[in-house]
Image (cartoon, rainbow, N blue to C red; front, side, top):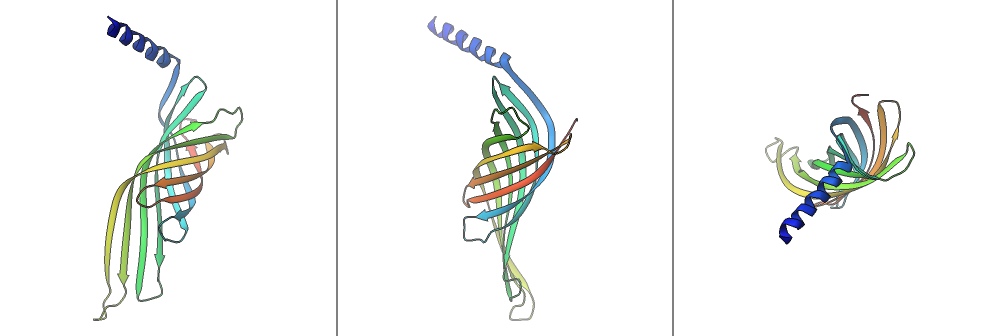
Amino acid sequence: MRRILFVTALMVAFLSVSAMAQVNFGLKSVGAHVGYVMPNNGVDNTIGFGVQSEFGSFKLSNAAFTFGALLNYWSKTYGSSSAVEYSLSEFTIAPFVHYNLPLESKFQPYVGGGFGFVSNGFKVDYKTNAYGFGDYSSSSSDFVFFGLAGGATIPVTNNRVGFGEIRYQLGDYDVFSINVGVNYLLGK
């Protein structure tokens, strides 16, 4: 009997919370960003770029969350004028959740994070070998990471939102980046 009462109370609580929640899912915006990337693995700082989209929002009382995904890419090359050229590149795909801080202004700060997938590539290009021909060697590694983000959005026009954010990804290679970009709002 206690178990039935507990399950009933739990269901009533869950349904009352769900009734107060406002869910708005679907493709809401797409955009692009550029960033200053600072890898923490002995690689010099570089420029990265990417695209992102927002898939909707969830509001519960005063708490507002935004869901989306991003794709990032950056690369760094060394020794381009010598006989051997080394390059390291990283491709990231990650879903994210942002908690929008409750402010009554156009400037909307947020914090968030999520888990993602990273593919790192390393290539050594020998421009000439002992026989006078070029050759190369490459390898790659894939891993899952945890990312943190903080930033803010501000409307630029009726259908475009600018944003600036910092990101830190924790994984096999830790990477800190500062990004700016613009999202195009769909359906406006």
